[in-house]
Structure formats: structure tokens, C-alpha cells
Length: 282
Image (cartoon, rainbow, N blue to C red; front, top):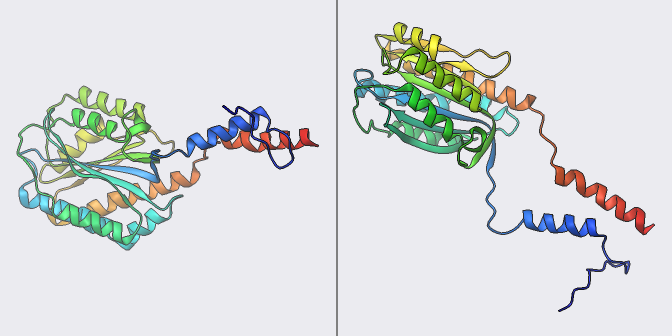
């Protein structure tokens, strides 16, 4: 077996350090490696489907609100103003402690075509079941893990600067104590979720808003305050959802532009190693 070191055109063997760096580069670029897509924000839309709460027609109105929001020029411009010009969005429907269903899997929105696909999925989404209790604490726990590696879960195919949850609910009193809901919210923020906002819907909107303001919403971003918005008029769902989404996307874009990328040790090492080799050759 030939074990001779590779020899450059100059006739001298490559230094050990250069050979090591070359091996690392070959390994990093090996076949079968799947890299996560970089986006500015991962936004999880968490929708409470318990009864009494949203009726089927109100659920449809809410889905139309999301579809209309993401296809507006204003929100698409906000998305494209970030460092990468893309976000990832998913929608999860939740009810009691064992009921969390992915309505729309994680997908990227960076263009009008992407937004149109999301809008079609939202408009065609049906409420899959009917439950009578709402466990926002359990929903937040599952939602947090769905962000993937940034919050300690399995990769969801995206990596971002910001991880944000937006909750939409028409349930007056979740099946949680105030302390339980607050504990779950705090755990989500501690795990890496940057912002939890809420929109309170229906004829109990003010009472819902009060509970969520006191116990559920939260922010881990310096200078950014979480929000809960009451919307009692079904006809105002679209405008309310658009306002919340617009604010969230704008916040994510701004934070992505302010983020300082971490240096990659490999590419900091490579130029130094080549410089060392050139000096030794001289």
C-alpha cells in the first residue's frame, strides 16, 4: 500500500496541519449531509380549537385572516427586509393536554409564490376534532420543541435568529391554573423561544386577554414587549391577525439584522494554516 504523503507542485509534502484542514473540508462536504435552511424567524401559529370557543364559521374566518395577512404586500415586504429575506411558518391546532395537531408543517415564505401556497393551505384547513378543554401549558411545551435545535428539539429543517409563538384563542378559561400557564410560558422563554404573543377572540375576548396578559405572553428580547390583543368582532379577525403577524415579522426582521453572526472556527483556521505553510516554504 502506498502511504506517501500527497506532494504539491513544489515537490514538498503538505504540512500536517494543512492535510488535517483538507480532511475536515472533505468531511464537511461529504455526501448525504443535510443542512438546515437559514431564515430570519421561525413563527409558530398556535390555534386553540376547543369548544365552546370558535365556531366552525369563526374558525374559517380566522384561517382566511391568516391567508390574507401573509399575502399582503406590506407583510411580504417586511419578510424580505430581514437578513435572509425569508421566514419559516407552521400552524399547530391544540385542545386538551394530549391534543396537539400540526395543521400546516414548517414551510418557508420568502416570495409571493410561497405566501400563496401558505394561504391555500390555511384556507383549506378544517377543524379536525372537537374537544371541550383547553390546555395552553401543554400546547406551549409541544410548540417549543417544534422549533428544533434552537430550543433543544429535533431539527425541523430551519435555523433562525428568532423563534416566535402567536396564540389565537376564544376560550375564556384554559384548563390550567394561572401558575401552571405562567410556568409553562417561562419555561418556553428559558428554552429559547424569544416571544409569545396572543390574540383573544370572540365575545369573551376581554376576559381572555386579561388571563393571557397576566400569565401567558412573554418576551426574551431586550426592549421588545409581548402583546395580547382582544378582538370581539368576528368581522375584525382579518385586520387583527394581519396586525399581529405584521408586528411579529417586523420584529423578527429587525432582530435578524442586528444579530452578529458567530465566527466559524474552521474558516478562521484555514487561512492561518495556509499562511503558515507559505512561510515555511519560503
